[in-house]
Length: 270
Image (cartoon, rainbow, N blue to C red; front, side, top):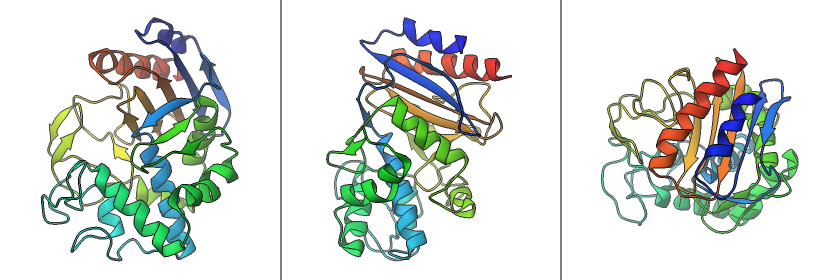
């Protein structure tokens, strides 16, 4: 895809990107797609997928208590548990504010590890990474931000997010619809949104502006970006997903560059 050439001009030491269609075929790739990058918060969709598999396996339930008092697995996945961003401190009643929380995903990982008697990194490997053939991906700490992966591996995950094999379609559909509608909050790097719509581990495009996806992105677009200069989006209306990984932290450069790439990709897909 000619549009992927845009990453050649990004002010980053290393960048790789790919586009995968809804049928799982690769539409195009650019850069060192086998290079391992820190994912930062792009780790969260992987962790969420493992959590949803744990739900389908019956190890946990979405509405069972988890995290602070009054919170559930669903609250933790949807960033509405009330936990602060990066510490085990309650800032709000569960379900009342969209407080983006790494601490919430740490609590989620601990909860699943206790429920399954398997360390969360190992559960993620067995439930998601190994079945999808994501052999270059691993979790080296927090389920919120400590994943390492390659574009080649995330293409496999992006295909799964469009045609699920590990989860049922109804579960994935629920995970990519608004959970706790109308809840306001801050989208890191892009300010306060009312509402700040989120699914179960996936950020939703909806009508947010500004946003890290493009002006051509449909409201149904879902995914995540990471502070390490990484993103993964799936646009069901376009029938495609895009992965881009870099080794320069998120900043003004990415706020400008990412939407331009997304719009170019969607335009080329037609």
